[in-house]
Length: 156
Image 1 (cartoon, rainbow, N blue to C red):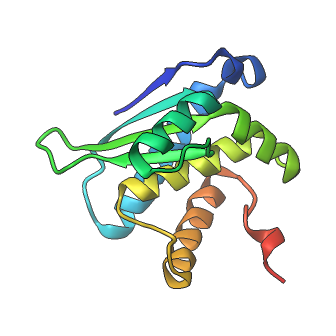
Image 2: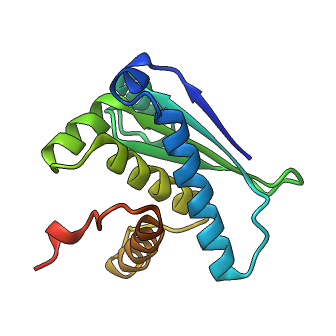
């Protein structure tokens, strides 16, 4: 189950189907990643579509970085309900990045949702090796969703 809370109207003003977009991306990410691992897909995720100020607050309180970022993931401890955790996305940062990277907001939102789901599943990008694994998984899920490779411009 994927629960979405749209806290900032800018999301739905810019992308009326924002809630459906994150549900589709998270569900596909869970399906593809669990299939690869041969695991059950019955996990839940909560997604908050909010603003830059809220992400700055969360980033400051939980990671000691008092500025907004595009996406934050908060993995849940093991629990009988199968709740993987929570994801929060900042409208201003996401919209600005999409424009700077010449992507649609929908494509960027799908990418960042999949990125957040991967963090909930324990993936990270702190080292080059971890980043390669995580980016390959992101590309695989995004390909299924019809989203172009978000890292293509970074490769020679």
